[in-house]
Amino acid sequence: MDKIKILWVDDEIETLKPQLLFLNQKGYEVTAVTNGYDAIEEFESSNEFDAVFLDESMPGITGLETLSRLKAIKSSVPIVMITKNEEEHIMEEAIGSQIADYLIKPVNPNQILLSLKKIVDEKRLVRQKTSSDYQQDFRQIFMQINSGLDYHEWVDLYKKIINWEIKIDNSQSLEMGEILSTQKAEANAGFTKFVDRNYMSWLDKDNKNAPIMSYNLLREKVFPFIDDDMPNVMVLLDNLRYDQWKILEPIIEEFYKVESEDYFFSILPTSTQYSRNAIFAGMMPSEIEKKYPDLWKNDVDEGGKNLSESQFLADQISRVFRKPIKSEYIKITNVHNGKNLADNALNLLNNNLSAIVYNFIDMLSHARTEMEVLKELADDEKAYRSLTRSWFLHSPLWTALQRLAEKQIRLFILTDHGSIKVRTPSKVIGDRETTTNLRYKVGRNLNYNPDDVIDYKDPAKVFLPRPNVSSSFIFAKEDKFFLYPNNYNYYNNYYRDTFQHGGVSLEEIICPVIRLKSK
Image 1 (cartoon, rainbow, N blue to C red):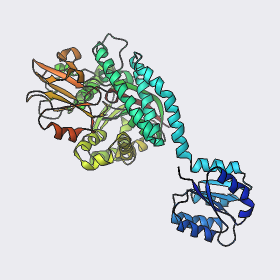
Image 2: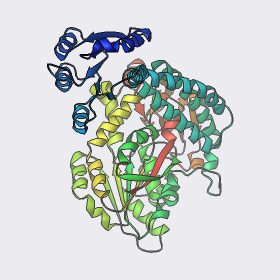
Image 3: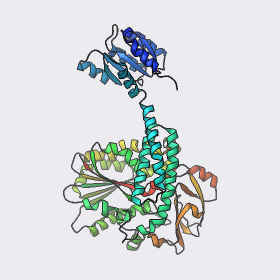
Image 4: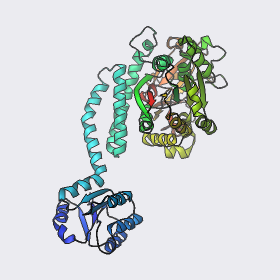
């Protein structure tokens, strides 16, 4: 590894020989000058300095003046101000000029070393510590995957993997990232087997050991907190994954206190048409079709599939609550609607419950498939999270939530399903009526590799509608995505490494539901 190069500027440099010798022995390369002019000249001629130690009080131009000039040449190089002067205004001026550290003379070698570790070696030290800690946890995660977990334990394991994913991303440890990616794939293989064994039993209404799922999410996680003490705002961010919530959490916590970070399991298919209708209706899809035959639309039917959520929500509220509950349903699908929400945010305070469906993340997922520029911007999980964060910070939704935070409100942030980055194609053959979704298929006489799917030949057993007498459902496992034999290679290249939903994976099924209060 190349030596770290330091420029040390002090008019009494001769008195600092012990410190300079100490740094040389520690493997640092130090260039010493005695005044600001020489420092600027060295800095301009050599573009390789990793840090600068700068005396504040020197003849000629002062340390603060030199600091300003050095920052103008290259602002990214960290500068440590060293001074005998402890006057507050000098410290404030130096800090305001974005110094990396501030030391008071006399400085001993260990102070200097600590400062360097903090400002120059920090990323390397964080990377080493993160890699070391993950290596220690690696075997435990491996053993957990194969230890017969229940659904609570699968959630805990998934959260642990996501927390490591974010830590390793931040530490920029590419090697550890590749190892974790492999381990996450192993976890998904185990989780899909777990879902295959247990999914049908979870839908038994008498099963007290089933996870909260889409159809009973509002009854269990939202409705119990609705009373007259404060307004409630529920934001459903379509397609929000747990990792994306963890990226948004620090932003939201500036204005809201997290009371509960909980979860639920999305029903199958993990797609908007099924999971979100189930959330708002408080019913499974086949039950919705039976109760609302004129409103439910199957995949092959023309028209929007989520156009009745407002009615579903109102009806569910009337079934659950014995007293009148003033509610409002708002759906945001474009910037104009978003700006209206931000402008009129305080009107939501007149409701017991305001339900806002915000479609941006789902649109981002679909647009990423269609638009080359978005494929470049979000070509991996880290970039996908970063793009979500950037959108949220500048969104009308965040403007609305900041305005609401000035009042006493309860806020729920949840989703309907997640998405997974698909990598492995799986061939499916079906007739013209077979649906086009890449992660699940509904159709007759489907021909597929049984190792790649969870299949239900009798959809009624999992409370799914049956468009035709012989219709069956298949759901892609892990990172698989369905392709027809026609133009197979073209569509494989087109869809591989895109974010899709509808199938069975940790990312799609385990969904966050967060309860917060304004601070």
